[in-house]
Length: 303
Image 1 (tube, rainbow, N blue to C red):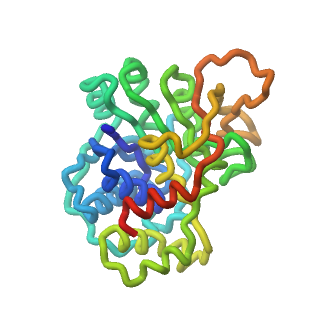
Image 2: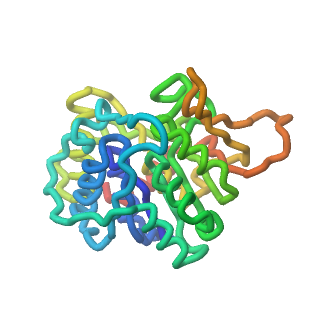
């Protein structure tokens, strides 16, 4: 599967990158970056650092939007650490990213109609800009799998909203309005798959690049914040892209709230049995085989 990842590389994005690089059925074509968990400069540098650490320095990286379509930038350094990468002590990359990620997405997708899968684990600003530049990408992409939204609240930044959608609700609204094969891997599903402190600590003596990466990027969460488990949000989106039977999905209309005073960024999923006929058919993930995905994640990374 030919995949382009769109990321705002923080802790779980780094693990998603590792899964995409190492999965035998994925050909990672490129990575695009956007402001999200931290600012664009850091998400881009983090992406280059992780790819180079994994020996994937041949994967091109293009930096994109440094702010949402409308409204203030929002970030999550409280969770990912000031550097966005959990305080990871990894060698900095000497590479420089390209710019104009939206143009790059359009170019790559239109050059290979029906062949590129997009996996988006970040605010959807780059993808929205790509649609605005050339709406034909909607028909040309093979599929879009995004980690974002929540079909059944609560959210993680407000009672109703998940961070990636909340950080740019207008971009998310545009993405969900398109008629394309879109899978939503929401917070209510990704929270079902966690990496525990004990599992991280079991890697203490391991020296493989993958084990070191997992240890390093989880420093802030496990050692500073003292959490006992973290959800594998973004890696699950990669897993669903290549192995969709990891989850159960229902086709539903999804709308994004862009004006609500209390509900900004909510992904409104019509789950009623009496819902009107579908207009766009987003594949909304509902349940995940968590043990099976955990095995996939650990085995693929050799942990």
